[in-house]
Amino acid sequence: MEADLFAEGRDPVQGLLLVRHASDRRWTEIPLKPLDNDRWAASFIVSKEGYYVYTLMGWVGEKRNNPTLYRELWVRVDREKARFSAWYEIFPRSCSPESGKHGTFKDLEKQLPTLASMGFDVLYLPPIHPVGRTKRKGKNNMLDAGPGDPGSPWAIGSEAGGHKHINPELGTLEDFRGLMDRARGSGLETALDIALQCSPDHPYVKRHPEWFRRRPDGSIQYAENPPKKYEDIYPFNFETKHWKALWEEMLSIFLFWAQQGVRIFRVDNPHTKPFDFWEWLIGQVQRKYPDALFLSEAFTRPKVMHRLAKLGFSQSYTYFTWRNSRSELADYFTELTQGPAREYFRPSVWPNTPDILPASLREAGPAAFRLRFVLAATLAAHYGIYGPAFELCEDKPRDSESEEYLNSEKYELKRWDLGRPGGLKDLITRVNQIRRENPALQRDEGLEFHSAGNEQLLCYSKRAGQNLLLMVVNLDPLHKQGGSVELPLERLGLDPSRPFAVEDLLDGSKYTWRGGGNTVELDPARAPAHLFRVHR
Image 1 (cartoon, rainbow, N blue to C red):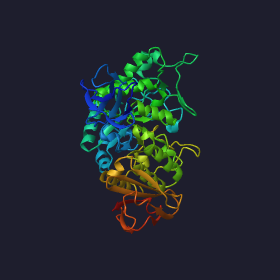
Image 2 (image 1 turned 90 degrees about the vertical axis):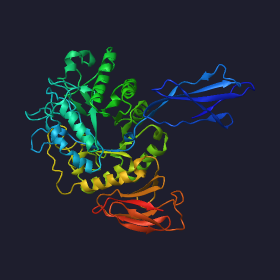
Image 3 (image 1 turned 180 degrees about the horizontal axis):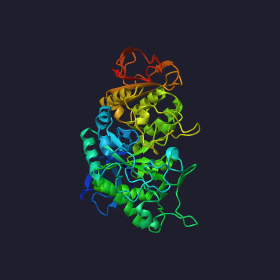
Image 4 (image 1 turned 90 degrees about the horizontal axis):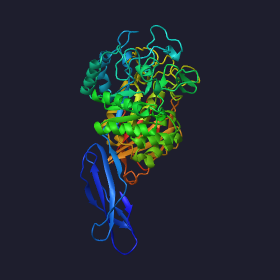
């Protein structure tokens, strides 16, 4: 912390930095040290999770008479998983070993050892609540559902209950707790999707009709995100005059699941709710559960995404999904890791989601999935995949203009053959192992981009202490590409006059490089990238 301290007259100006953890009553006083020309500085070390409050006290003269206090500021301290983790999104209802049968939590339990062995540490579940029947969507988001169509999990609420209940077809609350316990035993923490919206059958609709917007004809307004329409979903009206009761009930949803043991929440569309609401809710949850983390699913304007991060969201989805060229990727990640946002915005990069099959993956074959995976897992410390669809390189869109999957799992049961040839299991397992063994890949800072003399090659390094990694990724999934990697050796801590060794951690090959320019060539049919560890 730095501050300018000055006053009229000749008496000396002095000050203290006051710091306390939110759970403490007493302030710790830290003397300010002069820097230059009325600029003073002090620092403090955070030692536990939660909120720290700090402020500045200043006074004129030798004695602490009539001190002036600056307004209180705060800093949030999260656990390590807010910064470094790998998420695997999976629909429990698609985990049945029998085709066409609704899966359960117990079916999902059988897959936990495999997911853990692949190096994932967060098991992310879409909403697990009862699904509404009124206006239920059919396959491929069709307006008319068939008798066996399960509906979208985001159309929450039925006669079986709402946000604090389990879809009976998945199991019971006890089964869910058992799943979390077994996942934890495998090294996986469970993240739960919270979507603050209702199906027309949700108990809230009857009990609290004042919480919803109505059209002139008296009907409740369903959700829209043009050109998409969600006739099976009613959004809450956060501008209702009954907002206080609504806020309290929304908070109770998060607290209920936190009481069951959930500590990671993926929040659906937070940018469509008031900023003040999130600042209040996250603060309330984290004061009771300091280890709670919140992932913002806000694919919206940059300043809105950043505002949500400043209000308390631990992580945020990013535009990585649509950044493809060398310049797009380099400019965007330089902004995230070297600009002001690095102090508060933790990027979570996803190459796909159940809603998004981007152009970079559509009908481009496994090579496109391999290169996008390596980018996601090495550009950012925090990444996730919509698991089975990505692992098996599902690349068929609903139509040529759509980012939606053909036969989307959002609207039907799937039976994934995760053992079929051509999947990414081995690559994912190896890259996740590399991430765990190399501190440079566990932080977003230390990222620097380099020239490779070819716009189809993205070259970048990441450093943490003595750990230096160099990635070269072929952005062309169809053709072999080569170039000369130009490195600022001295800035990377390498002696320009001496050779140095690079070891490709993907295949174990080793090379001796000399000087700043060294030739590489990548064939996408064989390997999407070089993932070098540099030995000084």
